[in-house]
Length: 479
Image (cartoon, rainbow, N blue to C red; front, side, top):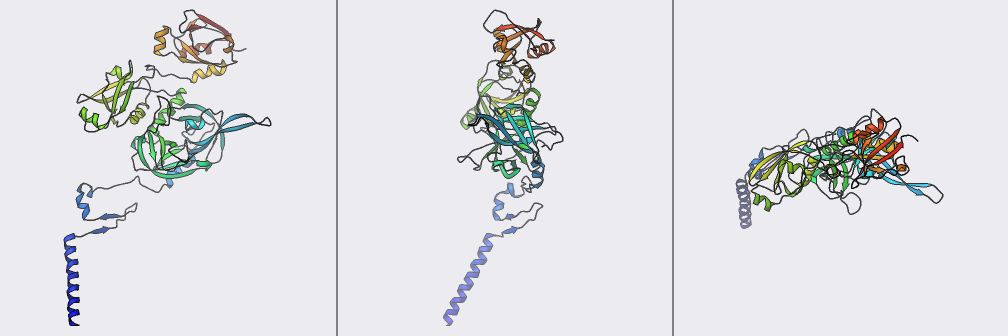
């Protein structure tokens, strides 16, 4: 019996000794419960000492994570949109309606509403329903397929509206809300974080398309298109546009057009009826690590110029193929979508400062931006539409190349409506008007002004490209 007692004492003493030595060698470990203003738990241990640079850092989310105030600011300004198309006669002689539904955001108290181009594309009848159930017929002010943004107008005043936030300040990991009408469920709010910025998913067609989406994991479904992406301050930072999905519904990825780009598109559509798109006049590609190493750059952040377009903005400023664009107006540029988005915020005739890398040195150039026709002028189709309604034809300004080829100044007839007053004169699209009632005109604005001031009878003289003869068309404004 005594033998077992001794054995038990030795075992117990060894166990206590082992625990004592382990605690001495490990050092102290502390668990701190830190009740902050936003709540939270902080864990500190010996491992913290291995990361000295972080030990005294304070990490803040886009607090508060209480989304009530942001949702209350956003939901009254988010509307439901139904865009209808006549589908033809039915079996009993009645017409059926097809179309699409989506969301929109009221941008001003006098009834301007932003949505996606694909929500209202080819629509003849657009209905807007407010959060308080009021319904209005909307007119299409203008639409831009290149950014998938459209501007509508309803006749009402003192409406709730959203304020723009700065999409450049949005950070990956920041809390955001998506507000819209998925599956016709009115005023639905979902939350998520910003997953990425400057994302290109190749859904917009055309060489002038701009895809630099804000990617989030906030739930977005059919019907959310055109709705609001909102930060926790209740500001609009994007227009929800697309999802990547195999099933047709949300699978974790949603994409929004950044608000800074949206603002510019809306200004153009409201002022000119069309987007004033500016270009650097370059072909570009993302920079890779191998090229960056060869060029002597510390990393692969930047955009490589592969081609300079003749007579373009970059050519005039002295940029060359092989240059690496690092920034625009002191804003860093890492990838091609970021560069396209930033340039897309400007109009032809605007100047920007381009920072670039060439042969181991950093340079900068002041660039005068141009349009696709290498012109610095802005154009407008708002007044041209006036002639389409009254006389049946639309005008546009001649491009620089057209002026050079034809050696004339004036306005080109871009389209003629069948059955209209002008259609009956046998005038053809492509006719260049050089005088109105004997008065010389040099551009679209002067042509429209002369047509408007004419009492009734009109004589339009001009040329067709490639034909030396002068053509003259006579008609009355009212028949």
